[in-house]
Length: 289
Image (cartoon, rainbow, N blue to C red; front, side):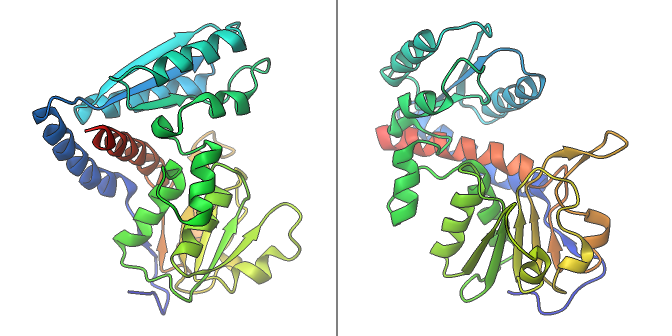
């Protein structure tokens, strides 16, 4: 199914409801593994006391518990040395009860985040950030997909959207969302345009798009006059408006009057990101079974 005309307002792609459905499947797969004597295990490492990271980590640990996974939360003070963190990652790599390792970013400035990411075994890289995972995605080989783009693809699947031959515009070029998102869309035979801070005439490009994925962390980067009627709009952003309320990169109230489908913030991509982390952890455990 592809949107051919705008609805007023757009159909909301409910990330909370879709996550609940996917987590039921995670729970079933977890029970099947436990019946074989394997409990899927995720280690979450938090260095420092970044308030946003605290929330993210708490949500991830709770999601594991709700789905029957074993989780280990390791907290360290902000002055933990890079050497000590790398040594701990090495120990987790060798722990047969741990199938996924996640080091919550950002890490303190004295720690090289790239070193940390590359220290995680590709076999336990459930965040999908390791260069081996990125390379596998680039060439279309099996590997762990980054959780946020993976979740966005599931949302497109949930509305039956056929990407073949469609024009997809990704606003943002980060290694975590923008670049892997573009690769996943390309794998589905979409024609993909990646836009960023140096892009000239962003509006001219988004008006051509059947799908727009906004992932730059900037409020109102996409407004109603920039959207083709009936397009699918996926909002990955996480910001605060002038009233301090959570919002995305998209002018939601305006764009939903033009788009065919739209994801809300909160309640859209966010829950899907955590769900796909669980899916990756289950897949890692199944590979070890």
